[in-house]
Amino acid sequence: MKRIGWRAWQQFTQAHVLVYRLSGGRVAGSYRGSPVLLVDHVGRKSGKRHTSPLIYARAGDDLVIVASKGGSKKHPMWWLNLKEHPETTVQVGSERRKVRARRATPEEKERLWPVVVDVYAPYEEYQRKTDRDIPVILLERS
Image 1: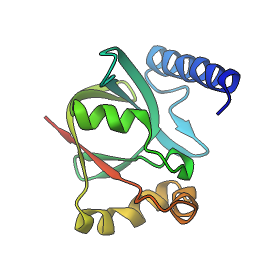
Image 2: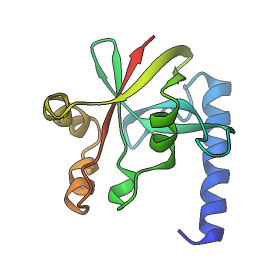
Image 3: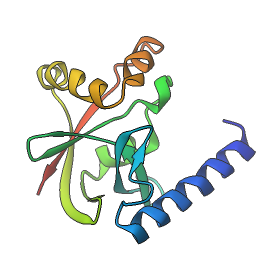
Image 4: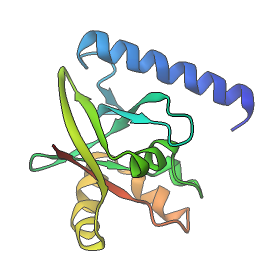
């Protein structure tokens, strides 16, 4: 993404997070009909706190997110940060909860992939367009 495009994306994301938090997820709580949560993460190099709005699915009491980055060759920064600092918080609507993030095992991914694709169909296309095995991340209540 070009530098100006990246700055615009960051500003859009910050506005999305602010509106979501202020409205308890009533506004900005979905994207193209798919539910959105906010995941907090700490920069693995900077130590700065960040929040990312992400599409999610439910698997029992766990929340499931996908590190697709639109099918990019690289993992999203939020996933690299969560790998380094897996204990975090998420906001789902007005509920905030403490969670521990971990990558789904291959067996879990096989079971969860149809669930996340049902929530957001473009994940299938994203996986086809990259050689990277797109991680499925479980956010387990802690």
